[in-house]
Each structure stands twice: as structure tokens, then as C-alpha cells.
Length: 397
Image (cartoon, rainbow, N blue to C red; front, top):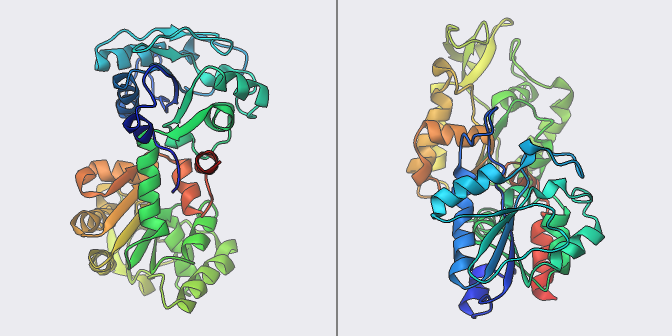
């Protein structure tokens, strides 16, 4: 992907003494007292900020936090707790600046945090007048918030249009590189795992991937719908019968390319959806009318694992069963271990997927873990993210 990178500008000596505006993703979880309960995003944002400081820039960083009302700042909207935590990690004092749109005082070597950007009137609608004011604050705009890359807002898109220079920070650049490696020029076979409760929420992803992947593994409620499409009974399992034509179309699209959507041959069922429900392994052809399918069976899991071990590239979005319940975690656990053991380049994203990766301790064996959530899903849908589009446009202008 042809974009300017912050590292390129630093290497050319173009950052020293410049005013650098960094859009980070510091939208961290907090408890009722406002204390940060998980600081991964803060830690992940520091390398970009430190790069700019080390290069002699005057650095401004901002982010959204929560869902504030534009033009109506409330204490709980403040980035002050984030600045405090970042300051502890960076061993420096980080002032928080409110009402910053019309001007910010910051010198070379200094770092200030600009208050919650979503409080600014016009942020969500990417108002040109707001974007131009933001752009006027800096010499260089750095987008380093992949989690917002699918949104065209003033602090993510508009500012990149009008800033003298617009570039990608190391976090965003790493996401771009990983996505390009997995989907644009993948090593074959390319295997995608798409799982979740509903086909409807991921239908466009399935349709997009069906044009490109060599194998499309479906799991969870999505697999149940595909089992129905294959003529199997699924009892009272979660499914979307009205989407059977769509599921069949995906199967046919894969078949036409000599690829396939493996349908489970055995499943793990229960009579109730609960952690203490009795788990029964049975053939996919033996599902009773009062059964709930809560996981793929061990034979299916092994078959899929064997195929993952032969893959060249793996894209993973979603656990294949109710892995939160011990009796129904085996499918996801086997899949996770196979991805960890595979020599394939793997990219994984989505909240439940990250939870499974953490549960099975395979963080270091996954090629790239995307923290983007909605942005990651839109990439899988085949969409060009606004952040990628504007940064590419600015790089070639």
C-alpha cells in the first residue's frame, strides 16, 4: 500500500522542529470511578509518540473516549486518566489541553494531550471547517488509530485531507502490511475461518472471501446455517433459515473455483445452553430435534486442524464453538493450536477471537493480531477503509 510513513519522514530528517498531530486510539475501558481497567491501547500508542519526540518534534496526541455528545463536554469524557497512565509509562508529565481547536501551544520535545476529539462539534460528520482548523495546528498529521480507520471523521479523514503532510504511524502501517500480506498477495493455500452467531452480520464478508480464499471454514451459528443449507438437521440450534439461499450461493461460489466450505461431520450437542450442560458428541446426521449444537466435534476439529497445518496464509475471525464453556471449547482450542503450530502467516481479529487467543496463550504464535474490530471486519468485506484511501491519495498527490 503506497502511503507515507512516519518512519520515512524521520529517516529523511523531516520531523525535527515540526508540529506533529497524532490521532491515536486511546479508547480504553474504565470502571465507574474512571480508573483505567486495561491499558493495552495506551501502551500500543506510545511507540509512535516516542518516535516523534525522539525526532525532535512538538507533539500533540488526541483520541476519542467513550461516546460523548458533541459540544457538551462532561468530566467522564476527559482523557485526563489516559494522560496520567501514559505519563506513568513514559515517565513524564503530559498536560491535557481543552478547547484546543483554535490553537495549541507546544514546543519541540514537548508532548501534550488534546482533550477528547469527539466532543468537537462536527467531528462525526467530518465537517470541513473543523478539519481545516485541526490541520492548521500541525505540519504533519499522523494516523495511528486502526480502530477508527473505517470511519471518515474530522480527526481521522478530514485533517488528513488538509494537513501539509499526512502519514501513517507504526501501528496503522503494521495493520496495512499485515492485511496486504494476508489478502492482497497471500501465500497459498489461503484459508479463512469466519465464525459467529449470525450469517447476516457476516454475509458480505463470506461473499467477499468466497471470491479469494481456497478454503472457507465456518463456525458457530454460521456453521449451523450452512449445515441446514447442506441438508442436515440442526435441532433447535441457532440459525437463520431465511439466509439458506445466501449460504448455498457461497458454497456454490467456492465450488466453482475448486474450493470448498467444509461442513461438520460430527458435532457437540447439549439440551440446554449452560456451562454445566451435559455435552454429547454425535455424528452431524444424528442431531435430535431438541439438540443445541454448541461446538464442532473432534473428528471435524482434527480434519480442519490438518488443513490449517498445510495452509500458506490463515485469516481468523471468530471461535467455532461456545469456547467460554469448558465442555464446548475443544473445537476452538484445536483450531487455535493448529494456527499456532502452522508455518502459515496468520492474521486474527475480532473481540471473541482475541479472547480465545488470550485463553489459549498463542499470542506469540499468531503472525498478526488486529485490534481494529469494525475496521478489521470491513477489510474482510473487501472495503477500502477511508484512512487507507485518504493516506494513499495524499502520498500520490
